[in-house]
Every structure is written in structure tokens, then in C-alpha cells.
Image (cartoon, rainbow, N blue to C red; front, side, top):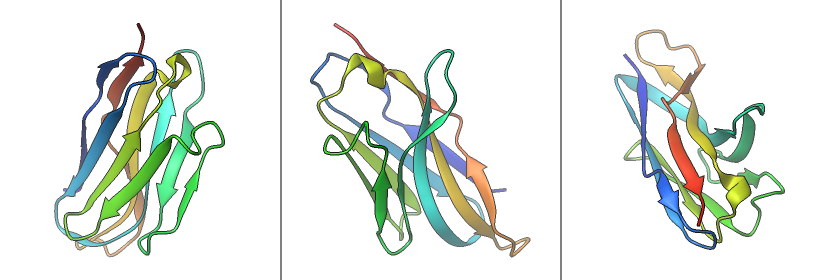
Length: 121
């Protein structure tokens, strides 16, 4: 069974940094695009950043220049380095990946359980 497990959230002061990690597990044939989404209370889930298997990236305008997404294909992992954090970055952050499991050989999107990021003094 394919799973995505996130780690690295927490409480940080404005201007601080956090690094989120997400690792895929299970019998996986291939992982295409991986990304991070976030959902603040009372708001819709939004894309923060995404990265292709080849390393092409795209970012939400609100995080450009502050956040960096990266991945390690050998470790089936994706990371989000968040710098210069602002209170408006407070949200639950979710890992998302387009995965082809060996069992089905069919591409499907999977979600992690979410990790809370709180930016507050």
C-alpha cells in the first residue's frame, strides 16, 4: 500500500525557517510530480510548490523567493525549505505525489496526512 508520510512542521517565529520532508513508501514503480499544498483555517487548499521528476519547479506567487522545493528520487522523498516565514504562512501543509504503484501500474495522486506549521511570536 502506497503511503506518504510528512515530518518537520512546528511552531516558529516570524522570519524563521522550517524544513518539511515527505517520504513515499510501498511498492512503487515510478513517482512523477511531487508537491506541497497548504490549507489555512477557513480557506481552500492551495498549491505551494511542485517539482517534476526531472527537477522543474513552480511556486505560488506568495512564496517565491522564500520557499524552495527539492526531491531525492532515490529516497522517494520531497522537501520544502521555508525561509522568512510570515504569520500568513500558518496552515496545515500536505504532501502530494503522482505515483504509479506496481500493483496497478496506473498513475494516481496520493496525499500525506498533513503537518501543522504555525508562524507566531
